[in-house]
View 1 (spheres, helix red, strand yellow):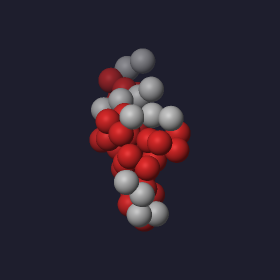
View 2: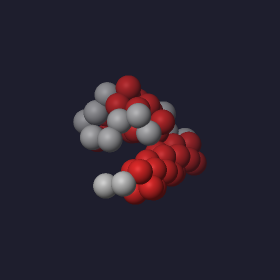
View 3: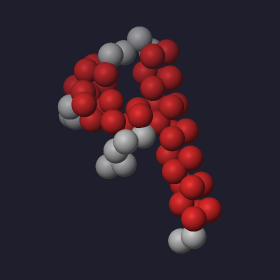
View 4: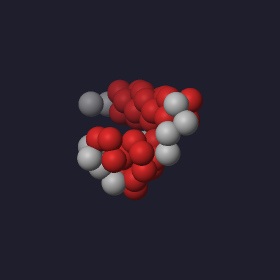
Length: 55
């Protein structure tokens, strides 16, 4: 994978992370509420929304 492909993937992931946060806020859910509903920790949701965690 070349540098351009890596940058594109990173940008795509950051866009997904941003959309996750926007969707959560539009539904007036806290990170804790989302975490509870999917069996994760609120810190995981925070990482997902900032694009810091990919799993």
